[in-house]
Structure formats: C-alpha cells, structure tokens
Amino acid sequence: MVRISLWVFALGLTACGRPGTGLAVAPEQCTAGVRWAVTEGSTRTLRVWLEVPSSATPAWKFERSARLSTVLDAWNSAGAPIRLVPAKSFTTSEIVVLVVDRLPLEGNREAHIHRAGVTHLTFVEGGHIGRARTFVAEHTPRGQPYATTDQMATLMHELGHALGLPHDAGAKTLMAARPVVDNPTPRDRMHARAYYAPTASCSRALSAVTAPSPR
Ligand SMILES: [Zn+2]
Image (cartoon, rainbow, N blue to C red):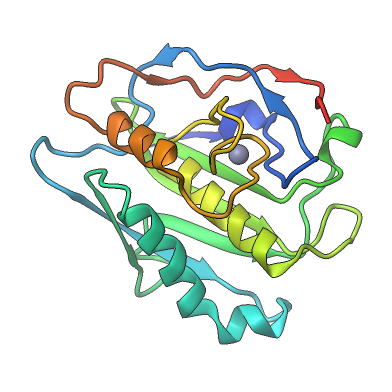
C-alpha cells in the first residue's frame, strides 16, 4: 500500500545541476530502506516511462526511445540487481520521467538558478520505494536552454536518485550534487551495487545539509 506522503529527494533541497551550479551536499549518514525492494538472489525489474509533452523540443520527440535506452542501459550495466526497462505506458510504470520546460525557483533563488532536475520518491510500507517521479528541465528556471548533453546527464543523474541513490560527496561522479560527468563512473556503479547488496545494513540518508557552492 502506498503511503500518502510524497518526499522530495533530499528534503527538497536538492538542486541537481551541472558544473558550477547548484548546491554542495554534505556527506550522508545511514538510514534504512531507501531503495526498491528486491528479493535476495533475484533481479527486480522496474518499468520506466519517459513522458515527452507536445511542448517539448522536437529532439525529445524524435529521440525519445533512443535517449531512454541510453540511460537505462547505463544504469543496467552497473551490476545492481535492478533491471530498468521501457514501460509500455504511464500507468504500468514504476518510474516516470517527465520532460519539463523548466523547474521553479524555490527557497534560495541563487542556489537554484541552474536547477536542472528533481526526483520525488514515494515510499511503501516497510520503507521501500514504491514509485519515483523524475523531472528533467530543458531550460534553467530563468529560461536559458540546457545543452542536450546536460539534459541527458541530468536524466542519467536523476535516474540514480530514482533508484534511491543519494548524492555522492565524490568530486567527479555522476551522483555528485553537481555532476561533471555524463555517465555512471566506476564509483557510481560500485555504490549502486553496494546499495543493493543483500548484506547492506543501511542505506545512505536522504537528508542532506546544503552548503554554499564552492564555485
Ligand atoms: Zn541530485
């Protein structure tokens, strides 16, 4: 049964952006259960629906399937017991990605001026993830367009959040708060495997403390 509560990843403080933008996030602490339930010894299949509205730029419409495949393949290669597959419809998906024109400025406006993506997680009884909703922006909150590579990197990064992965304090990983790479690095893949290891006694906390950008 799905709880009513809808959590914004990292307590809504996450401004997932590209180099030189967004927030730095302090190291995580352990908390239990922030991941999809996986039966030990098996692989969990999660269906991902990419919603491209009619208002989106044509490239998103023409390359929708290819772009989705690219990001799913990247995370599938991490070796975690999760297999991401394209969903046949919105209603049959566990993870929905929505391409939006821009995300709103919230809270600290300067910290969010390059806000590029956000992921909302809904949890089921027992604390596991029951649903994920990811938003990827084509423009900054003030209307400056993101390059396609930046949008794809944001999608790649946000799918990591959809898997439950928190920000990584590592400087050059996809799951850094301000990623400077476009694909999961060996460290990202290692974290994904460790995160879903049957012996994992804890997961990394969603809660994060924001700090001024060092850049
Ligand atoms: Zn993020």
